[in-house]
Length: 326
Image (tube, rainbow, N blue to C red; front, top):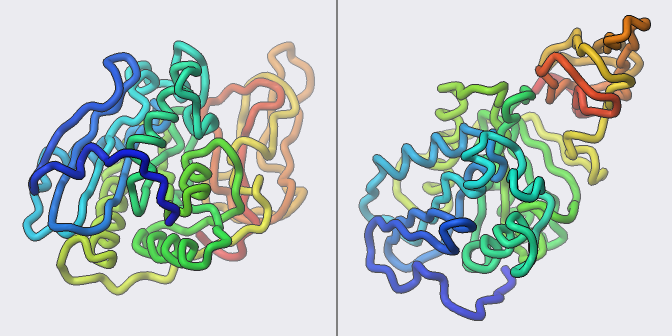
């Protein structure tokens, strides 16, 4: 991992135990919860990079309220709600500048609120970490077939660590792809920090299954990376897609709506489809004929827009060209 530590992390001088600190300001700040153990590595874990994604914050707040480990080695830093401004409004973007936190990294210290938040996160948290997990979900208006992902890395040691991290989340399928700029994943990639993100179901709710999957995966990571002691599970072999196309895992770029209107999809998440298959229709509100949406390639359905309405060019379905069931 590249070392770029102009100053110490705020947790370095904390005594062993559980701590709560806020960094930044009241308006642009981050609530941090720290479990400090014996000397060792640091894992950073956050939820709510987008404000309408609730599974990560719910799981992490349960840790904050209940987890008091004995014999912890290293430091665990949890950020249940990274993007407070968006979270309070239940929106993907911060309402004061309309920007997506996971598109503006590394941010700017003198930029808009979202850019300043990204810069604060990068310099005060990410640079001082050895591993990073970012827990996402499909949010309010989409449904996802739960997966764990990462950006493939040219540093073999970093990439191997990412693969091992993802394997701990063995109840998910795994989707890796090349680097794209601006993301939390790309910030980690540029610093050679092993990184995983998870995508929970979303659909405007919180499944108990998703919380269990996050817990099982994260605690398996803590055991296998020597933060805590405990019996390790026999890991399930995950369905895996390692893409060579950076845009393949950019969930908003394929199967765009051919018109504005009422959206009716005819597939479900995890369905397998063939190229050219009709997967839904858009019914324009002016009564003109319905327009079909066809699968752009064969594979498995991994994201659905469940909103019921769409604008022309808006995302409808994401398909990954993975073979077999996910």
